Image (tube, rainbow, N blue to C red; front, side, top):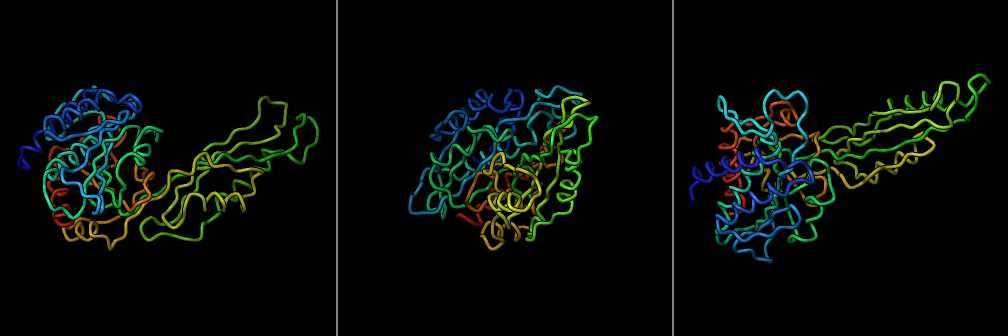
Length: 355
């Protein structure tokens, strides 16, 4: 099948995905649509919960393996939509609809790319494609659950909207619950150990603290206090004040290292990470994928947004059609030309690296 026909079919698949509700954990019917693509193209596939995956025809265990991955779940549409989020409509070259940009355009482009290479012999890499679920909610039954099921992965291309530029690194995320303690009392009595007042110095510490190791691609670790809560009634000084701290981790640290630093140095009574599994990601600028992309005129950058890269331990590249600034926005759309270009760039990139 030629690239033009693959592109036409990929856009048709995307339209069908848009009109099929697929909120995180509710992807059963979009999974069926993706199964339909592989069936029509005579590509054997497997389904694990709502994740659909396949390997290239001439898979060879002696070769390294490249993962192609994007997700088919969506967030809930926000209240600012003025059109039907579950209607695929085309206007002025834009395909509107929930999940069109994040990350339906990437997904169908990668599926088309995989299909293009599926039957080719003598590839330098095996290919594994995973159309994954539960990316938007970082759920337990998404790509993370597939890593013990699919073959070992040596490198990955994760499809997220990057304007087809090369996101060579991505920040990780750790959310901490912190507690600042004090002495509870009646508000009418003297109290020099008010947990709310004690929080003033703690907040100043978080505001001023700098992690020592920057990153070329991602800059500094960014730490932000995002929530604060204390007290239950006006005349009671609370025993403790609760903080939530959002930390965006660069590729100079593991999440465990960040947790160790904050637990050793922060002035909180306790500070506890909710999860350490959403790590930063990166790929060497000397990797063949990056070198090929640069040779094709694509720019490199570090991405502040989280994706399924965070559950991978291998080197990974985030790359896809569409624009990240449109993700989760009202009246989400992707240009049809972006999908056309995306498939061509994916195919050329892999032709340079795996053929």
